[in-house]
Amino acid sequence: MADLAPAELTDSTGIAEISGVIDPDEALDPEAGAESDGPLPLNLRGPLARARALLAAYPVVDGCNGLPWELRQRTGHDLTPGHRFDLDHGETGVRTDIPRLRAGGVGGQFWSLQVPTDLTGEAAVSATLEQIDFVHALVRAYPDALHLALSADDMTEARDHGRIASLLGSAGGHAIDSSLGVLRSFYRLGVRSLALTADRNTPWADSATDAPGARGLTPFGEEVVREMNRLGMLIDLSWCSADTMRHTLAITKSPVLLCHTAARAVTGHARNVPDEVLTLLPHNGGVCMVTFTPEHLACGSVPASVQDVADHLDHIRTVAGPDHVGLGAGFDTDPASTHRSPVPDVAGYPLVIAELIDRGWSFRDLAALTWGNALRAVRGAELVARAVRGRRVPSTATIARLDGPRV
Image 1 (cartoon, one colour):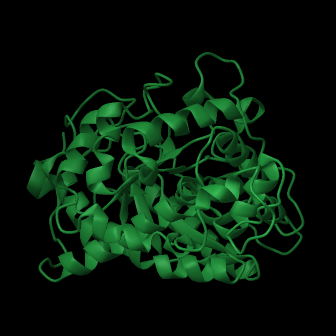
Image 2 (cartoon, helix red, strand yellow; image 1 turned 135 degrees about the vertical axis):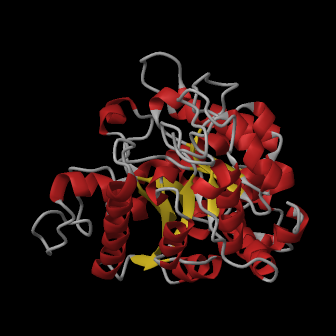
């Protein structure tokens, strides 16, 4: 990071409070004694019980959940109580509802504002606005469970009051219709992350699954990154080409997210992240969040396993470090893959944490994975924005002026 080194953000993870209380590794040691004032009860037996205890203190901040679009497809965003769906008492048609979020130890969720790439221009903008409106309505409909989070402080407040911090993330750069004014409008409405691409290129950034056009970012794409830095909006590099990832990391001043991906060295999927990009995350302060989508985790059509998820998490922790890995399961983004998913629904995060406990992950690394790393990234974007706004006014650049007429 150009203005704020990663070391300057380490106190904003939300896990520093465990220091000096007890050796955090002991809290996950099955042989540890029963008496302690440590962060976890030391008399817990079995990794699943210890996983649930950890999540009670440091819940999961998940980077990607497609419930808004899935409910749009199923119900047309009808929030009439009891009429179309009931997230408060269990909803069988989707993989996400409030009882299962609580059972899974979820304390923060980026609700993914998905827009298929065959929707472009004003149609893509409208579909995004309608989903933003729906998430706001969802939070109002379930105030005892959900809390709109526009900042890192909001995330902590939600956790401290037993609610799930609800953040909005746009799932494709085509949703802004190459307009910085639309980008700023989304931010004012609460959107705190934007994926630069989806499964196709935008006019200003290359996707991992499309023919190269810009070889990374065009000049207008660079301006999108700078304006996101000024706003304090997290740049999501999921599904971007490696060129776009490297180009963005070379110019961004704030941490990036990769909210829904996995390690290409473990599974050679085009949308997974290569090691050459993972090695850049420590300098940037960004977070790579591992998906539970089967095709990202294992080769072929066989069902993926919790062990596959852990293999990707292990690899990213080794290459990028424990401060740069997170979870971005992608529930309700692809109904077709549900039957092959290693985790059936949002109640299943303790299964992943238990596997990592079995593999020897420390309390500190697990608390960073579930809560601290995402919180630090959000706070880091806020700190950078405060610095950048002192010397940069809102950009009036257009794609026509920077990139030339569209062909």
